[in-house]
Structure formats: structure tokens, C-alpha cells
Image (cartoon, rainbow, N blue to C red; front, side):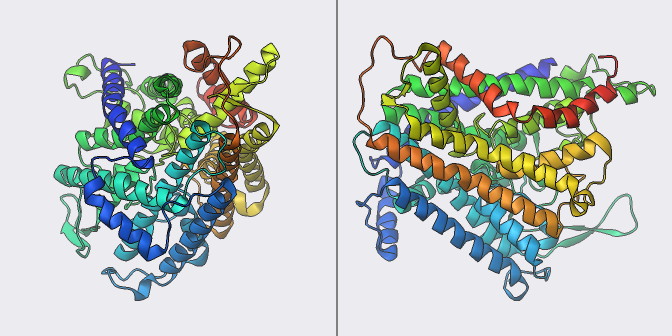
Length: 580
């Protein structure tokens, strides 16, 4: 870890904390129907939307009706986005005359954006028209992010309420999250990005004469800033351009890079404060934030250190990979593994971005994860395999961590022979069955999917790199899909009917195979009576619980994947560093 790395990591966490705390309180006010900063401006429009849709804002539902609304809304989103891609060639805002997207790619992309995964098996600037990018992908960036947030809010209500048969109104929650949280933040952030050089236009692509070649180079245009803002704030990750946030039109400066990293964690971090506010104990939110922060900082240090170490095969050929003594003062030798990284960001900012985007279920990238060292690439993969709970996606990170919190108090209860309790609610058989389903569904999808891919000819045909690294590419793809991250190791030819179908199935069940059990837990907890704390109640806001929660996440979340990781990045590391 260089001095720049320590300063960057410390600055990042400090600014994140300063921004997240007030936002968390604001989100709580919005979701509990209290007056807030935008009440006067948005209330008339909110009421109009309810009247047009025939929604009674005062009518709440139980968990099953809430879950059915989530599933129906998402299915309709998949259908609409699929049709939009299939007929885009005949629709306006298509200056490059993009053809219709193939059926298998359209299906994969529709499921991908509706599930907040944003896996992209296509090149954005060569496949999607402006209308598809705006009306299809950008709209789903808002709606899929809002869906994750409202599910988290429903689970919080399960803890906060007692003897209640309802957990909220999905349509009201969805409207408020989109109107008062995601839309204002995205408008402000889009304008900031434009000030940094991110493009926003409807012009046709421009041919320019490059300095090095005789042939002109085509520069893609489009409404990028508006999509980039919600891509980051909603932890979506789907880029307008094929190279995502490594493209200078998406991420032009070191400042835009820092702001994009902050925007990824902003709402996931803020929701921990929302949780504390809504359950009536800010210390509960701080405990979750502490566990997330410890895990994130520790794993970010490993990623940065691994990339700073460089590649021993290059060292053996005489390449100097040491850090220049003057690098902190603007020297030109960053040292380490610069393969696949933008020179304007370097190793630290690239490795930090990689850790953030995979911790947060975002999937945006500013460097090529496939070019990372084995350990540097394993950490982003492991962060996804933990269940995307280290801050995680908007909403999904919080409800995923709360699932582990319930499991942690259950384990503690087994140790002392006492019925486990969390937030004044007894954790009983039904809750633990749902917790088990929520935790096990993604490992099953990842490991079974990876096995199918490496066993079948169609799966192996997409692997370009042999041996352990090729296996890592497949494992990473399934981990990314099932955990709704969306980033890729690349090197895997995934835009085929086989992988488009396999990954779509993993994305759909990875999303809703967790959401439905979470809502079931929310309904069960809301119906319970609140019990008073006693001397035997495990405090869930101190260092002991934070340590127990971290241990539960690491042991339970990652243990399923250890054999698979041993076949991929671990053995590849031993091949590069045989003496270690």
C-alpha cells in the first residue's frame, strides 16, 4: 500500500460517511410519509400519479401481496424491454440505424436490467439505439434500483412494527423512492458529470481524423450523462459504451472517477442510517455500517496490494515494476500491474473502483478485471460471492446484511441455549427457513451454473483462456449474474444463446429467489409482538456483535465457494508465485 493508496482510501470513507448520514435520515422521512425537503414540490405530482394509476395510498398489504406486486411489475418490465429491443430498428432516435437485437440477447438484457444486474453481452454503442438506451435501459435503471430499496424498507418495517398484518404499499413505496430519492440525486449528479466532460446529446456519431492513423476514427455520441448518473447511484453498472467507465466520455477525469465511486456506495451506506432511524436506535445502524466498512476496507487493501505487487513473470524478464520514489509527488512510475488499467487512473484508483463496484452490486468498471493478478481478481469475485452484502446494491445490500444478522443471532442463541432475538423479535423456525433459502439460492445457482458451463460443449466453446484462468472467467460470470452484479472478467465469449439463457436464469432467480424470502421474513416479523430486553438478550449494537456478524458473513457466505476458488484464482496464484 502506497501513501496515495492510504490517503485515497481514508478520504473516500470520510467523504462517504459525511454524505451518507444526512441522506439516511432523509430517506427515512420520505418512506415514513413525513414532511421533507421536496414535499411541497413533489406532493401534487405524487397525488396525480396515484389518481392516474388508481392507487389508494392509505391501503397497505401483507407480504404475499407485496411480493406478487414486485414480481408482476418486474415481469412486465422484462416484456417491455424485450419488445423495445426487438423493434428498435423501426423506432425514432436511431441515427446510426441500429438493427433489431437478437432474441437471445434481448431476453438476456431485459432480465439483466430489470434485476438490477446490468450484465452486458453486447457493445452498447454498436447495438442499442438512443431510444432503447433512454426508454429501456435508463428507465429500468431507476425502477430496478427503486425495487431493491422498497424491499429493504419493507424488511425494516418488519422489525419496526409489531402485531401488524401489513408491511407497506409497493406502488406507493416505488413512487416515493423514484420521485424523491433517485430522480433528484440523478439530476444533480448528471449535471456534475456534464461539467466534467461526460457527453449528453442526440447527435449522430462523428468521424474524426486521428493523429496516428490514416483512417478516420468514429466517435460515438449520445445521451450518456443522464444514464451514467443513475447507473452509479442505483448501483446498476450498465455502461452506455462497451468499455464502461474506462471510456473518457463516461468517466473523463480523476474527479469524475472519485465522484462515481462515492455515488456507488452513497445509498447503500445511507440505508444503514435509515435502518437505525426507523427501528428507533441509531446504534443498530452504526453496527451494520461498521461491519460493512471493516470488510470493505480490509478487502480493498488486499486488492490494491496485490495489484501494486505486479506480475513476477514480467519481473523475471527484467521489467521494473517497483514504485518510483517520487510517484507521490507526481512521478511517472506507478509500479505494479498496470495491464488493463487506464493511465489516467492508475493502480490505486482502478483497484479501489474494482473493489467498490463488486462490493456494491454495481458492476461498473474502469479497468479490465480479467487483467488483474490472481489475488487481485479473486477479491472482487469473493465480494460478489459473499452475497453482495458489503454495502451491496441499493436496498439489496441492506436486506442481505440483515439476513446475515438474523443468522448471527441464531448462531449466538445456539451457543448459549437461548431463543435468538433481533430488534425485539424472536427468531423462530419460519424465519430461519426463509433465511436458509435466501442464503443458499445464489451459491446453488453459481456452482450448478458453473458446472453446467464447463461440462457442456457450448459452455466450453466460449472460454478463450485455458486452464485455471478460463475456469475463473466462467466462475466470475456466474457469480456476477446470480448475485446481480453485472461486471465480467471478459475473456469469455458470453453473447451466445447458451450463455444468454444460462445467465438470464441465474440473474432472475438470484434476484427474486432472495427477495421473496426476505418479504416473507418481513411479514412474519411485523406480525410478532415486541418483547422486552432482558439480561440474557444479546446486544446487537456493540463490537462483539459486529465481530460476530463479520465472522458469519465470511464463514457462511464464502465457505460454499472455497473449492471453486481453489480451482481458479488460488491455483493460478500458485502458478505465478510457486515459491510462496
